[in-house]
Amino acid sequence: ALENLQKQKQQKQLEKNKKNTYRDFEKLKKQNPDTVAWLTVPGTEIDTAIVKTDDNVYYLTHNFDKKYNSLGWPFADYNNSFPELNTNTIIYGHSRVDMSMFGTLRNVVKQSWFNNKDNHIIKLSTPTENTMWQVFSTYKIKAEDYYLQTKFENDSEYQTWLNEMLRRSQFKYGLNVSVNDKVLTLSSCFDTKGTRVVLHAKL
Image 1 (tube, rainbow, N blue to C red):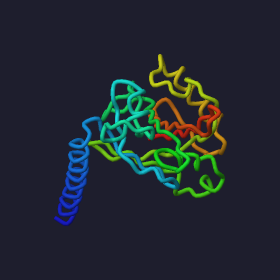
Image 2 (cartoon, rainbow, N blue to C red):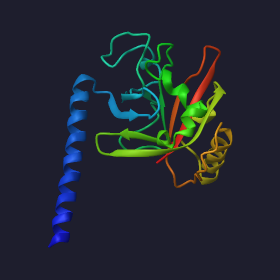
Image 3 (cartoon, one colour):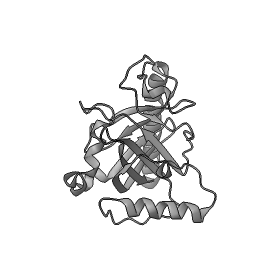
């Protein structure tokens, strides 16, 4: 009887959590139907709604209210699907001097950020679930497309990609990543010379 009571309590809590998630997104979607997720990155100021449209251009120059704004808004790659997440889910954001948008993503290549293990868990919520992602790679790189790949022909190609992302990391997180893992990739500018700052985490 006690076991059943505990199960009932757990079920109620799960339902409550789900309702809270749905209610939040219901409100966000009324403001902007393009809302697909909420992203939180410890050790940074990133705690924001994520949007997605049918290209990777619109939200470079439009805010959450769809008004023209050079700050843009953090958005998911148009090749990604929500809430069913792809093998590699990519989220972009402008890096601003005032540290708005993804400005503080630059923190992830600082030794002090890496040293705090509490920073290594990224939270991503969708209208259907709350997920947690463990960071396995952070680095700076010149602008390129390879790390932005969302689909892979086979497991071998995906594992080769994962191995390269691990190799690039500025720090050693000590995690193994396999073809059974889904990946979350965050990307932003590091400077005005075309350098990007990138974070990869596994579900």
